[in-house]
Image (cartoon, rainbow, N blue to C red):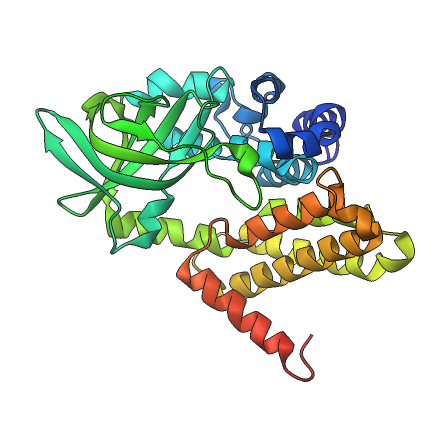
Amino acid sequence: MTIATHPLVARARELADGLLSPAAEHVDQEGVPASHIEAVKRSGLLGVNAPVAYGGSAAPAAVVRETAEILAGACCSTWFVQTQHHTPVLTLAGTALPVRERLLGPLARGELLSGVAYAHLRSYPRVPVRVRREAGAWLFSGTVPWYTGWGLNDVLLLAGVTEDDEALFAFVEAREQPGLRPSEPMRLAALTASRTVSLDLDGLLVPEEAVALRTPFARWAAADRPKTRNTNPAVFGIAETALALVDEEFTAGLRGRLAEIRRRAYALADHPVPDEHAEERLALRAEAFTLMRTATTAAVVTGGGRAMSLDHRAQRLAREGLFLLVQGQTGESRTAHLKGLAERSRPGGR
């Protein structure tokens, strides 16, 4: 079986062509509807990286990336809501704590959709969310700056830092409750449709049996850091969709360059030692961003004045590309990206 003929890739293409892409401009303006999420749940794509024993597919990494490219290229807002789900699945697959048996099956089978509230950990030593012991449970206090999928997710994986400098992750129902209050949905330049809010945590009490991971912060950070160095498949999905709007006579070189960067980036993503080739990973990530912006700019230029209309695909893709520039960004990746831009601006730079 090739990647292109894998059943999950076929389902992703069917979902993209039959539902997500035709509605993408409307969704961009009106928000991801619950019907889109139900379609994703039915597709089996929420279990793409989940263990087979729990109802998932345990698909190869190449299939996971291909489905992400397809969904992001069709409707980045819907892709962004559902992509949050895969980290909670992997977290549960890697734990032996009781919450695994309660939630891994429903998440793997697509019966429940999970969001995530942990990116703020990457701002350490600043600690936006603190956790402390309280009567045999865990008390969360602080603010989650960004939470995507509010009103669409069933549960969320919430993280904070304990008094003992541990990273603690626990599952919480994704609804307003004592100690958890969402902000109004944020108005963003792109992906407002993803229903992103901030979460005010004022003494949210979470039982011990909801904990999915508790580990020294330094250990968690060391495992997390390599993930933000690799190129997000969504970048290639947006670039491919944008190039489809441009006359072929102008895209041959761009397509060739895109294929080469993708090949190199994915080869590094599959490297058995995640910590190796850090500078090359970051450089390729920056190159992929630059190529994506070139592709979306070409789509806008091709569309002319019509591309400024909010119902035109080119401007939506250009704005989604802007969003991907900062999504999952760290200080390390920001510095590498800015250095790359500076080098290309010099005489003789590419």
